[in-house]
Image (cartoon, rainbow, N blue to C red; front, side, top):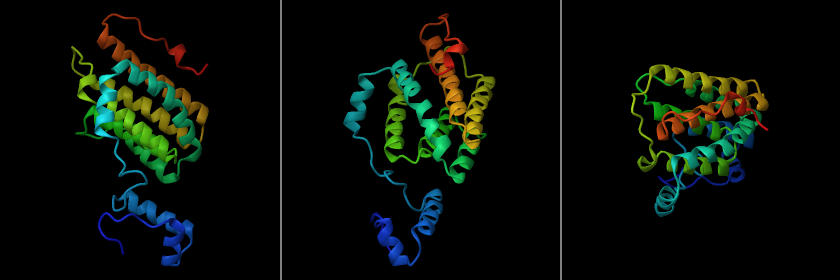
Length: 208
């Protein structure tokens, strides 16, 4: 019905054209978006390359993780309340790094699923921009030691704790698990920048 690249009509109009309820239409659209046949709302909007480049030049890895620590605990609270059953299945699947997938790609896939599960397009778009900035090679903090397989397993356990809390519709637990996870990430960054520096204690992972 649509030419390649042509945007979808408004839901109300499309439901009338198809002769179905808007609820049934949304279920069908979700299936098509899951298979990649229809883009998610906002998926075609790309951040300005110039603006993204300017952000990279003006920030650093510590600032990125600090902003993540402000944003993501609130993000998972929304996800715990708003995530659909399909969102929850995707989050639980992404919590474990698949064989052959790089550590960075596995981490990004999980966190982007969380952002999408908020059902807030602006949140998902803003988070995608933040991670694009954070993943820029100019902000990478190289480690003098190779990534330990135990660290990947630990990261997956942290992800699973977040996923389980969202599946249980427990925003407080989801927030606490996210804070603990991000403190762990922050400690890794600090350790790479200043070997021997004191790490943030686990007690600091709780809100307030």
